[in-house]
Each structure stands twice: as C-alpha cells, then as structure tokens.
Length: 272
Image (cartoon, rainbow, N blue to C red; front, side, top):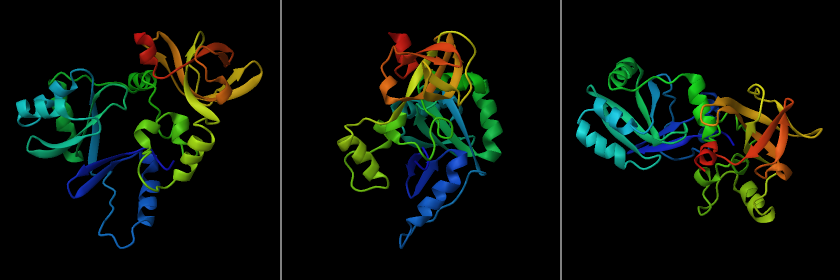
C-alpha cells in the first residue's frame, strides 16, 4: 500500500483525503502516471482544515450551522457513505463528506483554514461536544477501523488489514498491485500469512504498540493499536496475528496478560 485515502469527485476537481505522513508519497506516485493528460496536482493541506462531526445526531447538528438548514438536513441524511456535497457556512464554501471511518457514522467537513475557528464555535453552539484524542482513538479501535501509519503501512496488503471490501475492486481492469491481490485470492484461496484481529485483554494495563503477542513461548504477532474500551470495560487492541491463530476465542498472551482473539469490530461483539 502507498496510503489509505479517500477520493471525492467535485465536478472538475478531485479531492484526495490522505494521511498527512503519506501525502508526499501519494503526490509523487500520481505524478508518475501523468503523461499527456490535462491534469494538475496540488497540495492544499495548509489551506484547508478538516473536522469530523460524528454521532447519531451529526446530520442534525451540522445542518444547523449550514446555510439553508432544512434543505441541508435532508441532503446530509440522504448522503451515501463516502458521498459528498458542497454547502456554505457563513457565506463561505465548505465540502461535506459522509464517513464511517472514525468508528461512528458522521461527516468530515473541509473548510478554508481562515474560517475553521468560526465553524468550530458554531458547531459548539449547536450542541456538538469536542472529543478528546484518547476517546476518539478508543472509538476507532472498538469499531475495528485500522489507521494508516499505525495499523497499516507500505508493507501491508489490504487483505491483511480487512479493508478489501472498500479498498479493492474485484471487477475493474488492471491496477497497480493487482497481481499480488489475484495471487492471494486464487492461488492462496484468500488466505494471508497474517491478519488484523481484535484482542480483549483480560487483565493488566493497556499494551503499547509493538508489544509481542504470544501463544505459549511462540511469538505469533504484535499489537498495533490499543485503548481502554468504554464499551467492553477492559483493554482492547488491534493486532496482526499469524494465520494459525485467527480463530475467535483463541487464548494468547500480551505482555504476560491473558488475551482472547476476537473478530472485528468489537462493537459487533458487544451487540451480541
């Protein structure tokens, strides 16, 4: 993988939302594929702010700060996942996209940096509460959403991270990396050497990223993300595990503490 990113079509523009650490690699790779096409690439990271508005009431709260609130509420509610619309806030253009990657349904709002503070204040006045980093991370992990730069990197195959349903087309023609994917699917019958799974830590502290996961004395993987889960009321983690240890309910150890292998997302397990 080069990056895990989202592409939004805005008429004659395409907006790419990519992890900050990966943007230069993405731009460089795209430049390699421009030959005679009439296209220009630009880094607008410093010109726009991105803020997430998530939760069951996200559409209603966001609509209250956009112009034409009633119409905006209808459009936001009807917006499909990863769809986008252009709107206005205090006379200024904004782009709103539908997302689920924070672990909760909601929206990403892109606004010029000069108007970001005003939008934040308006959202606060509309009843939107600021979310601290630790809580946001716990929500993401509970939802089993991998993050590029932490749970995925340039050496990750999308099938390992479990993002193939949204990141891979199985019907389009040739694309970069297709050979590897086809080989895994057809020759390997979809089995990968390792896979991202959930771990419920039965006792002890929240393990740090990179902590080895063991079955007996054998190292079978490592933790990539972890948090104290408000929903599970115990430490939980995302970890890459060897393919022989992917069965839910398998007992392993993390830093001396007992852990149980769990399917993702954790929230699905809580609901059952």
